[in-house]
Length: 333
Image 1: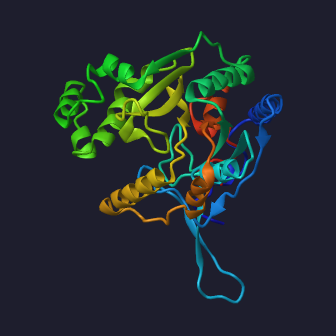
Image 2 (image 1 turned 180 degrees about the vertical axis):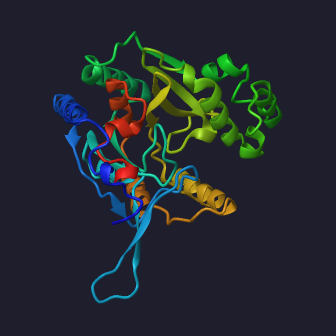
Image 3 (image 1 turned 90 degrees about the vertical axis):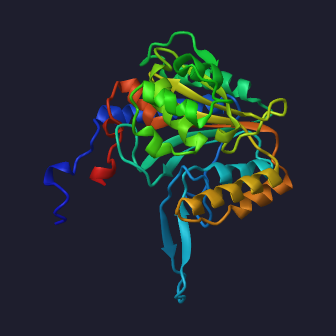
């Protein structure tokens, strides 16, 4: 017997009633999209390629073909995004997927290395229309478990300014340091250094997020361009990315974009992210070539979003930890 595995931890971490509620939630989501003619799809969880985002850590493994001694490195996907966009480029129209995703990061109150997400894409939608649909979906599938007030939308700039008195689009490292000192966040300078993006993430998570989504869905939109990820930059103001996040009771539930469709810009971002990974001593994954080919072939104008179903379920059952809604979290698998 593995000495690390305790005899009394063979059973699920969550209740059977919670597992039933998860099944009901998945069924309600499928009905929601069926009624809107959105196609359910499945894409690989393991692939030869992986995203290059420096903020994400991934799991890798090796596959040996019969009779061969040289292995092929494979990656557990942090998101089904690239494969789903290949389907969009092939003419799938609106699609969604409920699947597992994997991130080799911390395990904690809101994080498990393996988690469940709902991801969907809407050709012809802009980010505001997608926010409308998210609002309807969450209320429709969770309204009997969560009391909602009217949802709100606030720009990233307004949220940041309200709680820090800084303009995130123009603030300097010195400004960020002063705010951190004022709030007693003395570890911030060591963690963030001279990287504005790290400062924005740190201050947002420590000083702003806890106030968002109190008894209502809060949509924070128009993130700084440095936080664009795979979102399009707004043509009227290149300091802003057409990206949004959704919060409820201080918890991030979803991350969405007006999707970048420019293959050359995506190639540039991949290269910049790989350079950043190299500078930070992180593993250098291959660029997602099939995805780049799909962009060259033509990705339709669309908006897309990923929503954490484990976290939504946490709020529905008023759970304190993600382990309370997963049958076998990391410490029991």
